[in-house]
Image 1: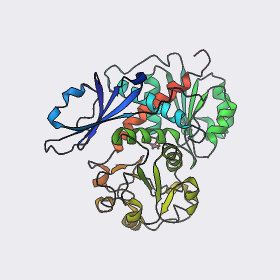
Image 2: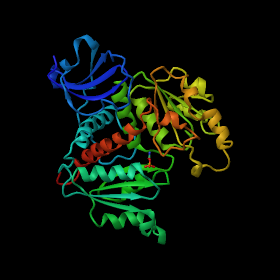
Image 3: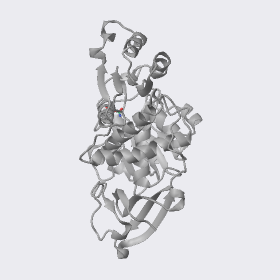
Image 4: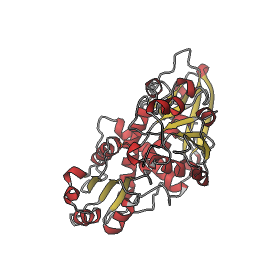
Length: 383
Ligand code: CP
């Protein structure tokens, strides 16, 4: 039935294989349920891209095999920019996720460089601090062969009073092909996109959206759970100020997840229910039976006034520790977009534990950003 597949993920007694099915050359995800011969589950122990013929899984260990066709979405992203998840269709999202699957393999090779963006200029314009997003956009652009320039507030003329728009118009005159922008103001990426000729990617605008984070989170979930549809996903903590939460609610909702928002009433107002999310103000109730527990950073820099008690009290009621995690499904997995505040929203034993996907999220960040840059490059002049 299957010639060979790439082993893309394994955890506990489940091995997720990706391979080509024979039906109309459509891509399938194969989930093989295997007996683990008592070996303790080790996060990432087999998590490498190696061609693994399905028949290499010993028949005596193979409990069952399920073939799950991925949506027959064409690998086509029809938009000039990526400004948010809002406005993207389900096929748009799936096209980016499927392109990212391919990019994972590229990043795991010794030779990581391709020429898909050769000759293109990518500017990373970051007005807010970033470790993961900026580094991964830089790595992604370089792996695709683009010339990448990083600009931060300290180095730009914003520190001399220049507006974002004047900076955008100035950079536009240098004929970049893609600008990746992070800004503290919601709507900054949309504003920029109206003023420049090149493609714009929103790398986070205030508390509004962080689309590539939601894409990488969805990719991580899909690879570990084999699906997103029907999963119960609890997004916990400072939902109010979180662009990550907003983009994830839009994206995971579009892919059929059952979403919960969990946190104190000051950080999870009832208005989120309008986005199709069930709101909980108690961790035990909000985590009950959840398949994915997604923790969020307490964003004190975006708070006006004291919305939470002391850090110690916050951790007691809303910080994720081993005890609270017991309320979730037995095989629940834990995520955090980073940066993490250990001992405030998450305990180190959970963040570094066997059920944590946090490091895998970072790896998926490079793959998703490669996919996004490549997708946008198709719409550039002379593409
Ligand atoms: N998750 C995220 O956006 O992290 P950075 O702020 O480090 O980019």
